[in-house]
Each structure stands twice: as C-alpha cells, then as structure tokens.
Length: 539
Image (cartoon, rainbow, N blue to C red):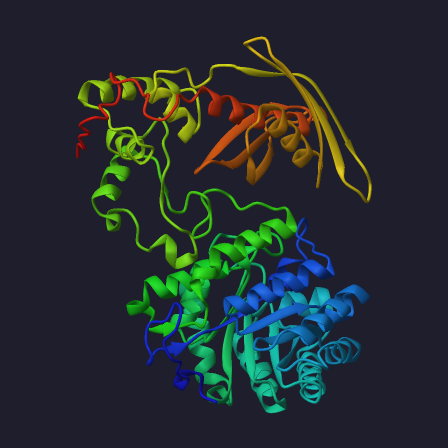
C-alpha cells in the first residue's frame, strides 16, 4: 500500500475528499500511562479506550502485555471491546514479549503488534551490548514472529534520530522484507529539531527498500518542547502516522499532544494538505475525561484544551472579540467541543466586556451608572483573580461582593462510612436572629454538607462542579474549594478556604446561599445603576 495515495472521505475535522490521510496512533494508555502520576486501573483504561475510539483514533496502543498480568488483562479486555479502532500491544524484539502480545490481542477485530529495538550507537553499546549484525537479526526475528500472531506489524527503531542513517535504512529495509507494514522512527529522547526530522524522513523514504509498501511513522518526545513541531515536520516530509497522547502526557516531558497535532492539521489544512479521522468536537471532552481518571489537571494555558485556550481577559482582545471573533481566535471553540469562548473579567478587562456581561445578567446601566459600576469593578478586580457573575450582580446592585452573611456556620460535623454513605449535620445562624439545624446523608462528605445547608436555608442547590486546589504548602496546607451549583435558572459559584477541605466546601456553599439571599426581588434593582424602564445598549 502506498501511503501517499491513500484517500479519505470528508468527515469531522476533514479538509476534503481528496486529502491524504494521516493515521493517529494514540499511546495514552501505554507511553502516557507509564509516566509517574498517570497510572490507571483496568476499568479506567477501558473507559479511556472507548472514548478514544469514539474520538476516531486509528490505532490505540493499549499497553505492554508482558509488563505485568494487569497490563496483559487490560490489553485483552480492550481488544475484546473495541470494534473499529486497531488495538495494538507493545513488545520488545523478544520471543516472550511477542507471544504475550499475540495472546492478549487474540480477540481483537483489528490487531497490531508493535515491536521495537534500539538502534543507536549509544543504545547498542550501553543498553543492549549488541553489534549491528545482532540488532539486524533480532529485528528480523521479532517482526517475523509477530507477523504470524496479528493482522499487522509495526517496527520501531528506538532512538532512531541518533542512529546512523545508513544503518537505520538497513534495519528498516530488513523489517519491511520480514513483513512490517509500518516503520516508526521515534525521537525517543526529544533531541531533534524540525529541520533535522524533515531531512531524515525524506532520506529514509528514498533509501529504505520497499518504502512504497509501508507507512512511515513519527513518535516525538517533548524534552525540548518541540514534539508537536517535530511531528508536523515529519508529516511534511511524508510521515503518514503520528504517535501521540491526549494532553501530551508521557515519559519525562511527555509526547506530542494529539489535540495539538490534529488541530494544527485542521486549521492549517491548506498548508499541510492532509486529513485525519478525528472528530475534533470530542477533543475537549476526551481531555477532561483523562484528567478525571488520572487526577492530573491540564495547565490553564495548554493549547487547544486548557482553560485559557479560548478565554480572553485583556480589554483590547475582548473589544475585538465582541466586534469579530476572528480578530483573536484562529479556530472556533465549538470545533474542539467547547460551547463558547469566555470573556474572563479581571483587572485587565475593559468597559466593552463588562457592559456585555452585565447585559447578559439583565442590567442595562446608563452612562452615569456604568461609570460607577466600572470604578467599583476595577477596585474589586485588583483584589481578585477573576470576577464571577455573583460579584457583578452585587456591584450592579450597589452591594459589597465580599460582604459576610446573612448566614454563618455555628457548628459543622461530618462522618464518612467506608463502603457506605457519608453524613453531615450543620447549625447555622442568621443575622435576623434565626438559627437552623439540619442533617443529611450524601454520596460523600461534600455532597452531604451541601444537602444539609440546602435544607437548613431552604434553597435548592444542584451541584454542577466541584474543584479543590492547594493554596499553601506543607502538612497544614490550606485548600480552596470552588463549588458551582444551579439555583433557579442560573449557575452560582462560591469559594471557601480552610485546612479542612470539607469545611472549605461548606464555606463555599454558604457563600453561594448568602449571595442568593442578598439578591433583591425581581424588578427591584436600583434605578440609579440600571435604567430598566427604557434600556439603552451602548457599543
């Protein structure tokens, strides 16, 4: 099969029916999962594998079957479950590894064994203790054994980018003759540059015997921050498979980020002239699933899937976005599964974004009212990282966003029962002299606390998001809890800080309740700040 002649039909993320297709080889569950802090149990791996198949990855490297009985079982279960995606197992060019991979993949509808062997002088001498001839023989034997146990074989020359090009071409040529259908030249230690990888892939396609019968693949690590750039460079030089991971997780600094490679090919389709089968609208949900399963959050400024990827705080940017989104966005958030771009209100925001958000909340201030609101907004923004809708409501209504009460916690007790529900009891006091005590059970202590506060204050609170982060260090570190709940027809966010994370969640819930209770009845907003009878919208 000639990789350059492969065509694909238009679909999600497509650039057209005539585009050449780049195969997405996802190794989140192998290279990504083996990185410190990212391990997953078998159930989590299966859930992630199903999400990756729904995303549209062509090949899913499910694990290293010989590594452990649990890894073997995970690969076997994924092989039994997936219907369309090719399931791949990793194996060294050793008989035991290859046999384990073959047995794990027995029930797969589409199977691949990925055999690898180091080829660089450094690895040959210090890792393998093998000569060139021995490496060549082992590579051929590995591919031949694997060929009889699966539908297709991929051969990787570990540390290929530091291997002599002539020897690399010799090993690859032998692998093709032995039955390999994909040749992978990995930048194992993230050492190369885009210009070097272009030169190597171009040279290999000219000098590997049988090159026209196979697909060339790249697998780039991010030690120097160039994994995505190097992967795209390899594609420009004829690679038609990219090995990558969701969120760029992997050994050391990680691998090329799948979402970045795919969106670069989509956004710059005219430049690259290639396509993938990825449904890009599922990139953000898949990224979020991985963070949930591993507990490892994505940095805010991470390309494509970070919280700030489609967020704008600078006043100049916000003003441009309100005029035409193309001024500061090269892709739509909906293309990666995010509903809308966010105009984050903070100390860098201007009047245009503030006015737009106030109008969304139902406030249409006149010029004098806007001047007063903007002044109070800037004062508050100097104190807080981000301004929430509740803060804006308070500012627009002439209230203090940081005002305490009317409810405060007098007493809080929680208990968690192993294998059962959690329980909580609260005693609250109101500034009007009332006291309220309630108890409740929940799925966990935070849920139980929220239910108890809900009953004590008479407010329906539907939890939609709960986040916890450390705001100090050490054994007595303080944690900040952020709760988002739905009450009525809108969402409310509250924050609480304590060395006890359950107490922090209770304080966050109480902050929400207090903001709800401080809202005046509908239609009774101060006329000095919002002229509701004759609303005027200013550009």
